[in-house]
Image (tube, rainbow, N blue to C red; front, side, top):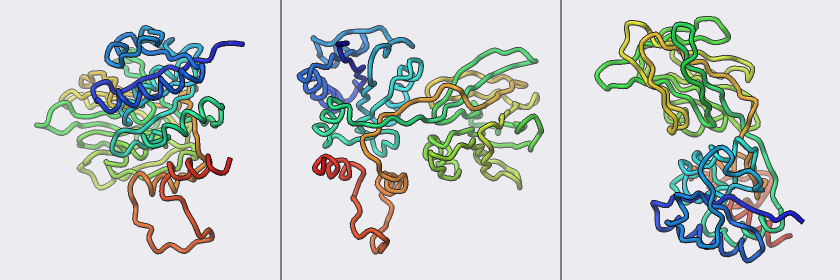
Amino acid sequence: MTERAVLLLAHTGRKDAVRVAQLLAGQLGAAGIRIRVLVEEQRELQLADADPVTAGPDAADGCELVVVVGGDGTLLRGAEYARPSGTPMLGVNLGHVGFLAEAEREDLTEVVERVVGRRYEVEERMTLDVTVSRNGTVVARTWALNEASVEKASRERMLEVIAEIDGRPLSRWGCDGVVCATPTGSTAYAFSAGGPVVWPEVDALLMVPISAHALFARPLVAAPTSVFAVEVAPETPHGVLWCDGRRTVELPPGARVEVRRSDQPVRFARLIRAPFTDRLVAKFALPVRGWRGARAAQPDTPGQELRNDIEDA
């Protein structure tokens, strides 16, 4: 029988994340699952029995899960290791909102039981392929799970951009930037910029201008087959491309950024089958008191549904 293994990542700058990672490693290790950690995190995590691996696109090869302890920023870092191998990612939230995470710290016992028993489902989330070119020459290629944002690089002046969809010019904006997002990213930067919340089951691409000085500057939702382009006007100051707030490319005047759906998704391990509406209510603490719907009792949080599901199993 092939030995089971998981790649464990944590926000090592937080003591609570280190402690939770140690608890997970101990319980999973006791169940016979090998723990793999990045070389640069092994000392902070103090997991002498873990298998160290060099950070890179093959870090999760051979693992059945990438388990991430931290907030959404740590989950986005975990996606860089999970995506190349197609390994599902499971997040334990220690952040404020933790929209990408599946469980909270109080659910650790249930998380371990589900992982050991392989009692989880896997869903795929769309990602973006992002290409930067200048004068027809490609100068950079990257990707994003949440969003690719073209932003001004200095506070003094607005960024002048021309937006294009499916090879046709749409509008010119003097703005702070433009966010091109996936449905997963609709609750992240695009949400803060005034974009719509899009259910993850919907295949779509979002374009959201940031503080645009224009009459037509509404958030746009296009087909998943569409291709977005944002061109930095030749006479404007240079800008910068950010992908998931982690990967960045400088954009000189005249640079062109193209964004399209990628063929390579990020896979998430899901322990519960809560509707996305429940996740919205729980993560944003939305007021629903007084609701009288078809079902008399609703779980307070996705984590509570996980605990109820465990008790009923």
